[in-house]
Length: 576
Ligand code: FES
Image 1 (cartoon, helix red, strand yellow):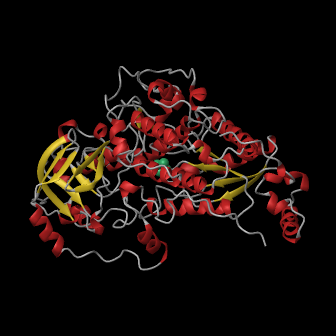
Image 2 (cartoon, helix red, strand yellow; image 1 turned 120 degrees about the vertical axis):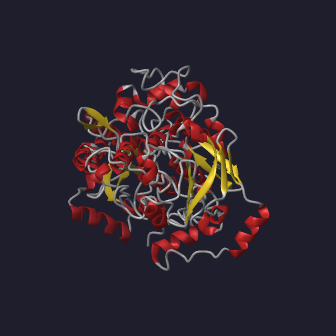
Image 3 (cartoon, helix red, strand yellow; image 1 turned 90 degrees about the vertical axis):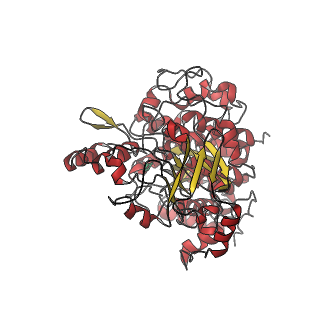
C-alpha cells in the first residue's frame, strides 16, 4: 500500500522538537547545548544510527568510521543524524554465548527508538546475533529502517595457502590434537586467520544473516557481500545514510517490506547459500515479530527444492571474498529468479526483481549455475522422531555422507564439562560408530543455547584418523563448523525433552533421507525414566539470566521471548 509523502509536522520527532511548549523548548535547547544550530535539525528527519561498535568486537571495529560515513549521507540528503551506541554482541568474547543476549539487543534497539525522537534508523551490525537482534527490535519499533552489514573480512592466509574462519580452526585443532602439526604451526595460524576487520569470511552465521537481511529487503542491493575493507563498503554506508532520509519521507516502514513472500525468499536464499543452521532460529524469530507464522518444517520443504549454488566453505570450497568478486548476493539471487518472488518491496523503494535485474555472475565455480549445483538439495534437513518430537536440524551438506544413515550406541553426557573432560581421555570406551549425545545445552539449559553442537571427536579416535561422527544435542553449532551434528533438539533436555532420558548404550538411529531421529527404547521404558527424572536447578536466581529463562521459547519457535514475539505496536510515549 502506497502512503503519501510525509511533511515535517508528520514526523515523530516533531512532537519533541517542533512543538511550541515547555518540553520542546527543553529538547531544542539541549541540542543547541551540544553545538547544533536550529538549521541542523528544524523540520528534518532525525535519523538514529544504532551502532554495535565495540573495542571487544573485532568484526565491528570499522563501524566507528562507518557511522561517520552514514552521517555524511544523512546530512547530504537533508536529515539530522544522531549516533546511538547499542550493546555489541561479540561472538568471540561474550560468554556463555551471544545467543543469551540477542533478545536483549532486540529490546534495546526497540526501546532506543521508541523512547526518543527518532524518525528512522540505520542499523550497523553483522557479527552473528547482531543482525537478527537489530532487525527484530527495528521491526517491533516500526520506524523506517535500513541495515548496513559490517561485511566479511579478507581471506586468511598461511604459508601460501588460504585459511578460513572457524572451519580451519576446527580442522587444525584436530590435527594439533593428533600431533600432526606443531605448537609453532598453530601460532602461525593464529596470526594469519583473521587479518582484517569484518565478520568471519566463511558462510557462517554472520555471512548468512547479512545475506538474509538483504534478501528480506532491509539493505541496499549487494551490500551484504562487500568485503569490509573495500572502499565501496564506505560508499555503501554513505548511500544507506542518504536513502534512509528518503525512506522517512516515504514512510517506508518495516511492515511494508517484511511479508510472507520476503521471508520465503530468505529461506530460498539460505538454502542456496548452504547457509548457517542458526539462521533457522533467527528467521523464525524475525518473522514472528511481524506476525508471520513460520515453523522449522518450511525450511525442510524449501530445502528439498532449492540446490546449493554458493560454493563457499563450510559446505563448499571458496570464501566470502571470492563470492564478492564472483558477483555477490545479487548474482546468486539472479540465478535463483525462478524460485523467488520478485515483487517484494525493498528499502530502495524498488522491488527485489528490479534490484537484481541483469546482475552478472563472474565466476561459475563460486556461484554455480542451477544445472551444476554444489548439492542438488539445500543445506538443511529437519528431523523428527521420539528423540525430537518438536524437531531437530542437521546440515547434510557439511557432513560426511556415510553418516547420514547411521545406527549406533549412545555415549551420553549430562553437561558440557563432563563431555569436554571425557573426550580427552585415552581410555574412553568409544568407537567411530558411537553417537555422542550432549544434554542441557538448549535455550534454558545452556543457558542461551551455546554453540556446543560440534562435540569434539574423542582424542583417541582423532589419532586414529576419525574426523566425523554422529553427534546429537539441543545446542546450536557455529555456522562455520562442519560435521554430522544433529542440533536444536526440541524440546530441550533441561525442560524434560526426551533427550534428557538417553543413557549410554541406548541405540540411536539417524536417517536423514527419511528425516527421522529415533531412540530405540520402548515407550514404557521412556515413561519409567521420565517418572524418575528430576528437573535440574535453575541456572540463574536473579538478573537478566532469570528473565531470559522465564520467557525464552524453544528452538523450533525462534528462541524469542514470549512477551516480545507479537506484532503489537506499543503506544507512542507521552511527552510531559
Ligand atoms: Fe564475529 Fe564470526 S566472530 S562474525
